[in-house]
Image (cartoon, rainbow, N blue to C red; front, side, top):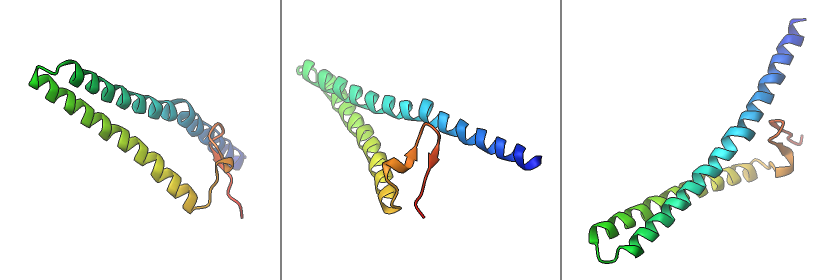
Length: 106
């Protein structure tokens, strides 16, 4: 009886983690990437629209730099994940984010 309860708890925990990943983390990553792009574009707009004001041009440059840093970090995360998955030989068809499972070949 206790093994059934432990299995049920493990199954529900796996489902919960899969749902958190699918419903919270993945959309959050997309939102942060979009915010980095918007921040960069805002810096470009600020830099181009304030050519006569050196202080605002400097602020625009700063926004562009921080936007590029944010985009670079997000791309780096995706690249590192891709390298790790390829190194371990895990293909995308082996990962099921909806269920929170990874099926490895034996």
